[in-house]
Length: 175
Image: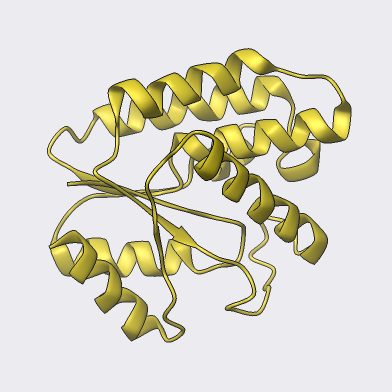
């Protein structure tokens, strides 16, 4: 089973994803943006189109490594969300990335399930990677909702609060 965990920063994707992957014995794919930061790209509001393209390529490369299944801390959908926000902030549309991701999601269907972690469930915490700006987190949430609706992408929302309940909720969705 191929699972993408999506949502704004500081919603629990990494922590829960690692626990679910361990519990189910399937590979966990770290967020590609963390690797992009290591190689020198700026993230969040400052992410360039080149950074988004790099993240997209890296994510796809990691996903094909596990043809039997994985849990990904963000999938290619997050690239579309961050590109859409970059287009809003910079007023410099990069429609080719958005078009490509939309076609991938609709035609290739790279994920069996997309699981969304909404904001405002957990307190924003600085992990040293992503910003802790609540207004940016809300903007990300709005873009996710726009893309889910406009592209007609099925997704599941994680409503649990405790780590244990979140792990169980996802395991039930997967099995």
